[in-house]
Image 1: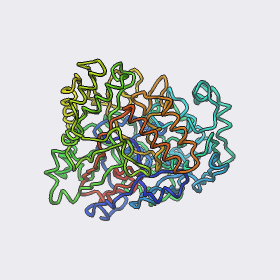
Image 2: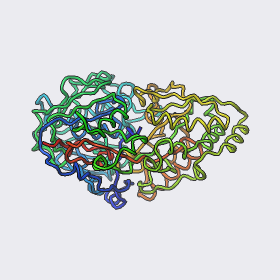
Image 3: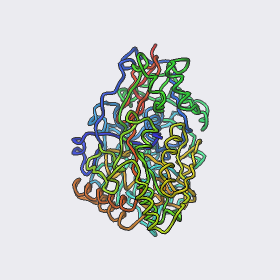
Image 4: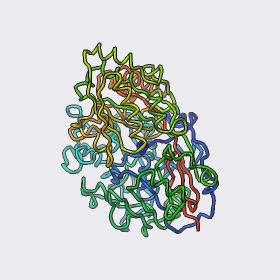
Amino acid sequence: MANYRKRAVAASAAAALTVALAACGGGSDDNSSEEGGNASAAKGGTLNYFIYAPIEHVDPQRIYVGRDISNFGRTVYRSLVTFPASDDATEASTPVPDLATDTGTATEGGKVWSFTLKDGIKWEDGSEITCEDFKYGASRVFAQDVITGGPNYIVSYLDIPQVDGEPAYKGPYTGEGQEHFDKAITCDGKTITYRFNKPWPDFPLAVAGLHMMDPYKQSEDEGDKSNFKIFSNGPYKLEGTWNKDSGGTLVRNENYDAATDSTDIRKALPDKIAFKIGQTTEVIYDQLIADSGEAQTGVTGQRVPPAYFSQITGPVEERLTTIESPYVDYLVPNFNSPDMKNPKVREALAAATNIDAWIAAGGGEKAYVPAESIVNPSVVGYEPNPAFAGPNSGDVEKAKQLLAEAGVSNVEIKFTYPQSDTADKQAAALKQTWDEAGFKTVLDPLGDTYYDVVQKPGNDSDVYWAGWGADWPSAITVTPALFSKVNLTKGSNGQNYGAYTTPEFEAAIDKAANAATLDEQTAALQEADRILGEDVAYIPLEIAVFNFLHGSKVANFNTTPASSEFPDLGVIGVKN
């Protein structure tokens, strides 16, 4: 997840042992700023959240960007369970009740989960949140031709028959296979029960980490037209409409009852939260550094641009938060590209990739550390992928030899990435050694939306940029989530941007999904990653370091594992 990428929760290795089969990410530093840490935070005022690129989805079942999962989860969308706003890695990765009375009851070895809803929980129109609302929310995920771009774990886990490798249930808009869905998820008063086709012992972590299982009121559903619609059950609601290009403003939801929630998780301090979209990262930081106007009560999920590090000194530096992110940035060859179908061409691309130059162009060691796998080192069971061992400076001669073995030369490739001043420089750095090796690189920066473009099956790019962090504290949410064939539908490649699929990889992740122990699951996932490396299904670049500046009138500024180390809107306020 620029790293405006996917959701990740960091946890300590010890936390992994609290949930059977769950592999977890690594710890978090206490990163709250003393300047903004505990200063006169009270209810009131307007908090401004500055964002460069448009948010692609605000529909809960379609949100799949870490920053957005956290922002909307702390403000407008509540779940059965959630993660607390804590700096302690173990506590932050242990689900607590949210709309449910507890963290769920598992039976049949984790194949069946039941939750009971709290009393007094309401939608923004004052109507009760029901078990049927949760059931309907889950049903929307199966409409993969309409509800695109979001997480789809429930599609492979829910106990629904398969027809030609796809679920017999096609979602609520066609009703096809509804009888199967109605057996897999049932309601008994306030109790909802989910039945899975295999054990899902860490299901509460999936519920807490994503909005995939959130409730959705059927009468409010407009299918694809709901993409920028917010119908709240949290402490805030949308004032007016959401504008994709400029954002929107959240105001207090008068039908939210704080007694049904944890004020440690959703303090709901500002009266308003204004999401301001469209200014470049450089313009945002000009304002934050100057501490002028709306930026005084401003936060951002944009990282400090490399050219601005020299300005972060003295009193300005007191408003800076630095934390290693839970994300890995990587390149993805498009397996539908005629050239990238040739494994020697993919190997040549990897050999010619100058990661050192990419990092230097992006700000050096202040901004990144090199990655040796798509799995973050904080995840239990991490090991460097042997396919990417060796120098990070790009081996042009080796790449030339590989292209010769492939019988090709002057290979034209199109590299697609999310545009920014920094990304343009980084892309140019990759192009230099790629071209020296025998590629003819065309740079294709996307300045509006990104993931909804690269997810399209007919996209003609040869190489994509992407970034990822674990969806919840488990390694099974990395390689299977990114490369499984379950992503691939007629309308979208999901998170499998390069449309990769092989029987060997599918067998490895199936073994992991059905493993009886954490050790067995870890071994299967390590084998899956080795297969990806041998196939050059991805090329790891780096792990981003987050550097965030906030305004001087922001109180309680903090980033937490539960917010994927972005600003945690559950605790942040404005000074009075």
